[in-house]
Length: 212
Image 1: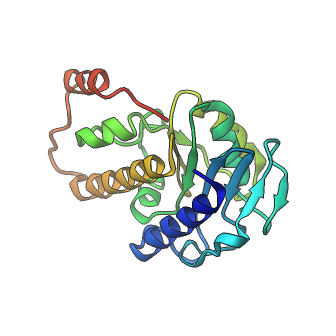
Image 2: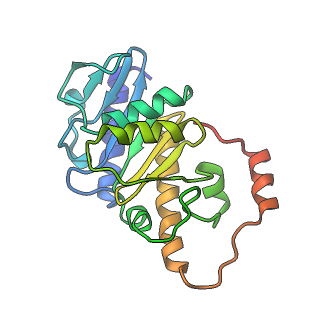
Image 3: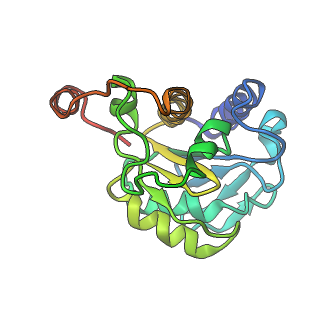
């Protein structure tokens, strides 16, 4: 995708997620790989009011070369790109239900959400929990990087999800599936629930190999 179209697409996607209340205020950020680096949403910006011309442009070393200062969480995006060679985009949200799950005591840190639906297994798979770090702490990027090689999505404790995809559409589809699964998990919490079996999960993995 040419850069001008990529800029417009990021703004379109950001506005869509904001209007559907998947992100609030100036929370959340988006990045997209382009031919000579990355485009990222600027620091302090609302995803509902992005100006395509003011998006941050980073070179292949992660240095700002044009536009406004990038999101303070740019290191999370770069950590995902370093470990996932096929990643074409990364989305990070503070979406309500995912954040709520990230705050629960006693969840499995190796795989936070159970396999409720086939589409969750296909688009997200296993979801590890990254321990809590204060916003802006670069150690969070290191922790995400350690998990990113094996997982296209991680959940930051008391914070929110970070998801990579081969394209921006794929990353958005996955993070929305994650948020919906978190909502279902909270709705079902405490009730007898029929999850997908290990055999059903393996069948899905064979039919639909994960990408991104």
